[in-house]
Length: 323
Image 1 (cartoon, helix red, strand yellow):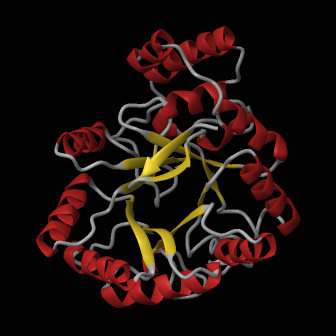
Image 2 (cartoon, helix red, strand yellow; image 1 turned 90 degrees about the vertical axis):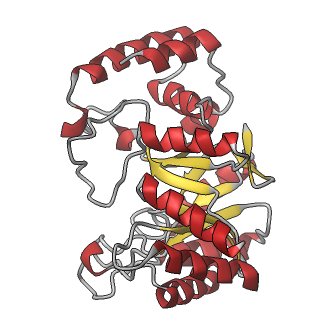
């Protein structure tokens, strides 16, 4: 298992997404997958306080509740970092993101405390602002996040699905206060690149842009490191499953060129497409931690094996240079 660091804390270079755990993935399977991940050296798990409000019978917080129960039953403590997110839980039952709780000071404080109770922890390992809240100034959100860190109920901060200019505003707000800045950034990202002028099918997704990575590199040059966590890293199975076609945003010539090189490298490495994609992400500049969602042991084992796949510099460069 490869590893990376978040503000000096070592975590696995692969993050296990727990979005479906305790809901569309039944409890027994969810627990088995978590156990297998941890046994293999995995120490980074991702959830959110709204998972999965959109499925039939779902209210949100099913994933957090399940993870809290798993932690208690397995005696898991600080060896596993559990990241969660606040801000996207609907306030009206049966609605969607149009009624999200948002990121006001009160909403952040209330949601973080509920997440802490569900997960059964004294302090949340990593707390993200799940998505932008145009109705709330970034400065107010950062003040609320900083207060949680000062209280000791949150250890590390992150932003998910925020435009680059909001990242910079958040950094400036934290610096002005002398408080903690968000060090972890979560966005959609994979080897295949969508057209940025075409909307993604999931309206809640925000894709990492070249500007974002340029920002991260520029920040690192100033001594302000970030870790980028990439969700939908395997495009929901589209690399390998005929029943999961690529969505419209990926319908452009660059996709076919990249797939051709991906297949070449997969043959050379004796690996699957998915494993090459994950290895490419783990070797990305700047650092990217791929987040994978799985529903079976076979899917998880394929992803775990990718952590031992090291592409040659030539293979990585060939994959990256293809447009």
